[in-house]
Every structure is written in structure tokens, then in C-alpha cells.
Length: 198
Ligand code: PNS
Image (cartoon, rainbow, N blue to C red; front, top):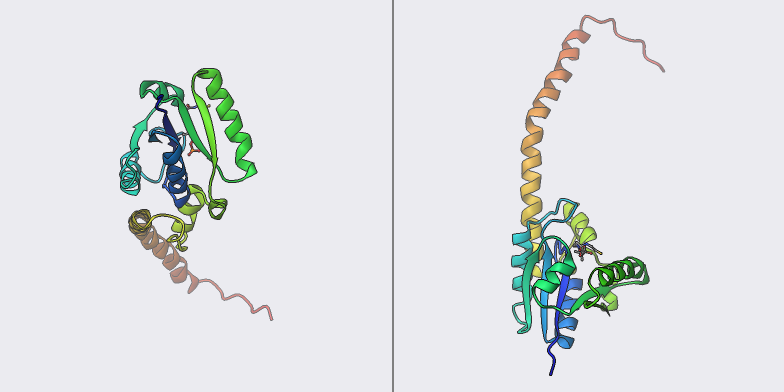
């Protein structure tokens, strides 16, 4: 019988409970599922590709038919290299569909032998995205119900380090500001005091 190998490509910056939900669903219908982390996205990722890979490996350790890999360049070329015949993508809401359809049709144009399979995520993840998780984490909101515990921990570490760096970077500026503020105060003593408005 023909075995179907699929790839689940994405940025996974960071991986969320929604991604895990889709991996669980995909692992039930495909013989092999490769979670493929994009290595060179246009935007600057929060996590390195190695970090994202490690998190996904830990998250998927219990699935016998799921592996994690990274790729650069065209997704269809990667799919051909690893012998995949299907691409798994998740649809959370109708708003995802337009972009996903465009991408699926373009990928089909590039590689007609590769089928895109859409699966619906659990409704409870319909509002969940990596972008929102990053934003909430950076602003100190609760992320524990949005990502696996390991990812929540990594996010907290990342944000703590970022805060530490920005605090250190601000320190000389603060000192300079204090200097600038101090100077007019000294001069103020030789300037005639203004009249009160009231
Ligand atoms: O998780 P994302 O960011 O929605 O995933 C998008 C991804 C990685 C699937 C897409 O950007 C992609 O396949 N990039 C690789 C480059 C490529 O093949 N581009 C042509 C798409 S039609």
C-alpha cells in the first residue's frame, strides 16, 4: 500500500497549542509527518531556527510518525527533496482561507505533484497566532494557556533577556538625560522667574 509522507511547513515563531493541535490531527491521517521550520523568513524571528526546532522536537516527542526538520528556499523544492507528496496547512477561520488558497495554488503551479491538505484546527484555537503570543509575552500577559509549558518558559527567558539588555542600553542615556536636565536647572537661577499664570 502507498505510504503518504507529508510536510507541515511554517515559521513556528514560537510554536503554539494550535500548531500542536494540527500536528496531532495530521499524524492521524498521514503515515509520516515532517514539521518543517522555515529558516530564512523575510521578517526577523524572535527565536532562532535551532530554538524553534528544539521546542518542536520536545513537543512532538510522543508522536511516533512525526519528525522535525528545517528548510530554506522554496517549500516545494524541500518537499521534493524529502519525498513528500502532501503539504499540511491549518485553517483557523475563513480569513485564513484566502491566503492559504493563493499559496496552495501557487505551490501547485510550481509543483503539480504536490497536494495541499487543509485541516481545521479545534475551535478553541481559532484566535491563536504566534504573532499575538509574541506580543502578549512581550507586554507581560499570560501565555500559559496558549503555548506548551516549555515554550512559555522559553518565551519568558527570551523576554527577560531582552528587558535586561534594553535596561542596560538605556542606562547611559538616562545618565545623559539627567545631565541635560541638570544644566538648565543651574542656569534657571540666573533667569528671571516667570509670572504665575493664575
Ligand atoms: O507559518 P507561516 O509563516 O504561515 O508559514 C508560511 C510558509 C513557511 C509555509 C511559507 O512562507 C513558505 O512556504 N515559505 C517558503 C518559501 C516559498 O516556498 N514561497 C512560495 C510560497 S507560494
